[in-house]
Image (cartoon, rainbow, N blue to C red; front, side, top):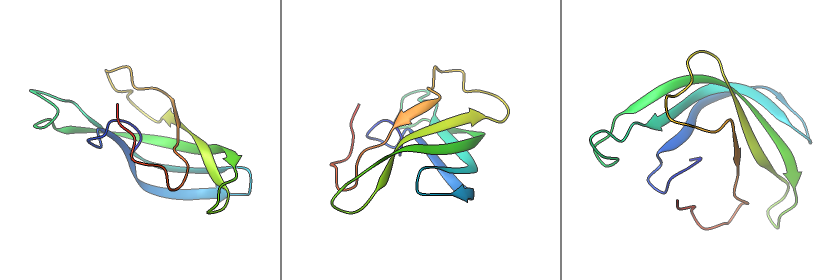
Length: 97
């Protein structure tokens, strides 16, 4: 889940092509709720994306990546979906928007 408490933006089906102590790269599908007629009844649009993880941070549970960046492999969502997301640290309460 990247945004919205109702899981309105997320990346699924990730396959990793590179993974190091400082970054990771892979591909997956970004799903975004179109919220038509409303978010509870909305359908999800799917967008193939390349994904990179960066910004390693320490935590009590071990290091984690703070930043997820997507590169749109085809169409970009019509909404102003960002290209980068700040990830929550392990053990953080769920985010809400």
